[in-house]
Structures are given as structure tokens and as C-alpha cells.
Length: 209
Ligand SMILES: Cc1cc2nc3c(=O)[nH]c(=O)nc-3n(C[C@H](O)[C@H](O)[C@H](O)COP(=O)(O)O)c2cc1C
Image (cartoon, rainbow, N blue to C red; front, top):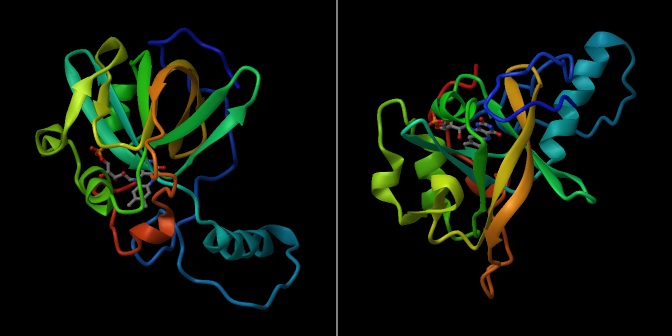
């Protein structure tokens, strides 16, 4: 993991050899095919096949990641994300280089990370099914300016704003290492996050590559 000053674009360290696996019926995020053969994988082709079987087993939470930088606002739905350190508490989120959000985030010092409740498919659709290239998502959602102007979604059950500690090349997505600096929630009774399986049928608003 490289450590860089916020505002630079150091994505030179390589991560995995290839980007997230494609082939989903509804686009590259999540794969819907699986079978029960349970065979062992050896060699490149078999390993690729094993990954194709592995990925459909995942059902991760979805987040809305927001950013404001150089007078622009952006945000998109993100599934490639995880806590990655306990002490210090850190979180990694992965943005497609192709997305409008990445273009704004690449020079940003802060990113907002929002969990969605299971009932909030409409928010997932707004941020994951439309691109900011042609559409102002923030004209269709309740939000306010948080730390450093970062858009905070009023209706998100839990959120934090994280300082960008560094970026790393993961292939067609770039990882943003975040240290939370402020946050809110959870709201009572909203502990059931929207997951990949809840977004079945949602097609990404921007080609991933
Ligand atoms: C279920 C799902 C998961 C997604 N996960 C990611 C992700 O982890 N990273 C990412 O950059 N885009 C992800 N996307 C795609 C973007 O949210 C989508 O292309 C969005 O329209 C991009 O908006 P933008 O061009 O305004 O940035 C996902 C989309 C869906 C439907």
C-alpha cells in the first residue's frame, strides 16, 4: 500500500493481476452463474474458473461514495469496499477509473461513505444506475455539506467522511485508503444494509472499463 499526499495521483503499485471478474447478467458487479461441481482449480484457466465460481457466493453491502473537489460534486454506488485496519481504523473503497466519480475523487482529500438500508433501492438506483457525466444526482436526493464540503446523504442510516491516505492500483479500479474523520448513525432500526443481492437487476450507469 503506497502512502501519498492527498491530491496526488499515485496509483503505480499493482494490486491483483486482474480486475474484478466480469460476466454478470447485469454487468460486471456481481456474477449470477454458479454450479455445484466443487472441483479443485489448478493452472490459469482452472483458477479463473474457480474465481467465477467464488464470486457469486459473495453478497457484500453496497455503499454510496460521495466527493466534492475543485467545485464539482460526484457520487456512485460501490460494492468493492471493506474495513482494512483496526488500529488505526481504516477503510478501503475501490472506484472504477471509468466512472465520473473517479475523475472528481482522484484529486480529492476526503470521500463520504454511506451505508444504505435495505429499503433504499431507489438511492442505489440513483447513484449506481445513472452517471454524473450527464446527470446531476444531487438534484434528486436530500443532502448537505459535511466535512470539507463532502456531500452527506441526509437519509443514509450510517455514514462517515474519510481522509484519503493513499491510492493503489487494483487493475481497472483504484483503491482509496480512508481514515474516518467524522460520521453519523446508525439510526435506530436501520441495521439491515442493502446488499448486492438486493440490487439484482440494477445495471451500472457507467461502463466499468
Ligand atoms: C451493484 C453495483 C455495484 C457497483 N460497485 C461499484 C464499485 O465498487 N466501484 C465503482 O467504481 N463502481 C461501482 N458500480 C458502478 C457505479 O456505481 C455506476 O457505474 C455509476 O453509474 C457510476 O456513476 P458516475 O459515472 O456518476 O461515477 C456498481 C454498480 C452496481 C449496480
